Length: 366
Image (cartoon, rainbow, N blue to C red; front, side, top):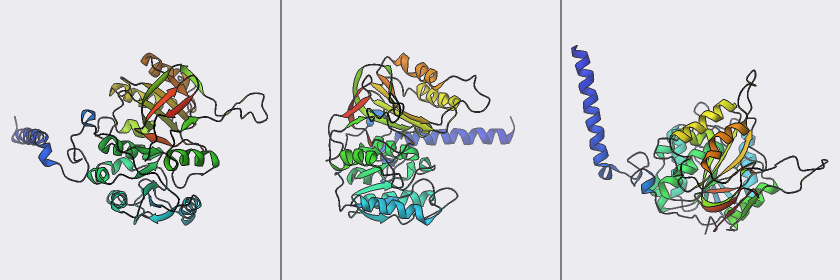
């Protein structure tokens, strides 16, 4: 064995011993800043904290606007987002780095995480909403101050790439978070109605697709639901964007799905990639012990050019979800669509797969 080889092995042994020492002394190593061994509590689902609910949002409240994912390259989208929130009756406070840019991201990792931490610490701010989705939230999920969030729970919402943050915050702190429109979304009457019911009026809301919208057709063709396996189930709502959720697998920020109603949505992914992401959830055990599954919109998820020999989405969903023997339905108004539900992550709910409904069992805010 060469000297260099011996040196490499010795270094590896030292690193392994250090890792074991850190694991054994993790309670002493924890700090106020989140992250593996730094979350203020032991990582893992067995140590999940009790649920916390934020105060409901009210007209006149201040919303902290953050950009934890993509940069906003033009002024107008930010102006529209601010004006939209003001039209809903809120005051708006911009994060210090909301106009920031680092590559495609809305500022550096430290800057984007700091805006979220600062708003949780700011007593003037009643809730925090993302400006847009995109990518990059996984880069800051270990930089949030989860101990602070536990002490000062507030409304926190967004969708798409925000899937990582809404699930991580719930998993690490117990705070009910919200898979909901971002500030730059189209705040149409449907989306606004559901947001108000869940986040502002504290209603045990019913999430059901529009009924009887036939248009010029003899039957309803849009926003239909399809039942894969009928039944009624109860459990906490967990999920979001499939690609983002599956990318958290194996980390302490991945949610506890045991006994949960898993909701999923996706956009612009080939079917074989959807299949691979679902296999990741299956292999990491996230599909074991589910109470039920609600599939939202899988927008523009097709076989791709020249791949028409692939499985269909119907076949992929059947393969992964029918063996679970739990209620499953598809087509819920969740995802990259104009009209969308506000889904509280971690909130107990009841789903009816035949009716295509999800009803909150209690209000998600206080």
